[in-house]
Image (cartoon, rainbow, N blue to C red):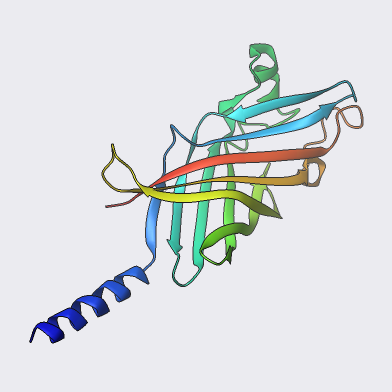
Length: 188
């Protein structure tokens, strides 16, 4: 009888580990940032301060889904005048396009490590493929939240002009480097 209970427990544990878990983006630890060349003189950097969404992941099956929404009006260059201009129709047109989204198509794993996400970025109403390279990924039992928290650092490059963000070209380079540090808390 003890052997049957042990087998049932092991089967239940292995079945539950193969179930996808959902994680809610922690908006206090997730800030997509970007940088672009400014006339060959310097590199301008900015970030978005309001991000929400979910990550669904089954590490055993090596599958997952990422659905992120970024409030375009939360753009922050660290300079009020630039922030105000970036929100206008010249650039991010936040009145017409209040949300920037990223939705995954697939996750890439090497062993147990998440190393990439293929997905689509929607910016200014234009949707294009953008692949994220995940250069750091880890999940822990968080000591304060008392549940699993996963974090990652992801990077990508794309041309803003592909999305219609043409302001200042060619003086301001169309190439953008994107970096997203993300933490997500396992849902109840």
